[in-house]
Length: 71
Image 1 (cartoon, helix red, strand yellow):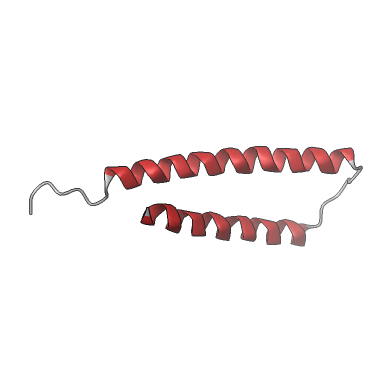
Image 2: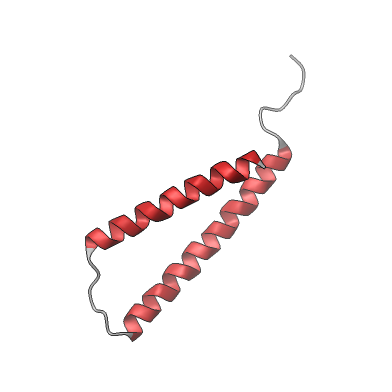
């Protein structure tokens, strides 16, 4: 049916930029949170709290991906 690409190059570029931004926010944000917790003297973190925070992070990234793909 011709040379029609399956995905738009603009959409791929937008998603690439979005995921790069999310990567930096997650890396620096989690690093900053760990440094703050360490400075406050927290020596252990509840596993349930980590699971909930990771699920919130995954859901927010998925919603952002859907929004970025629609642009």
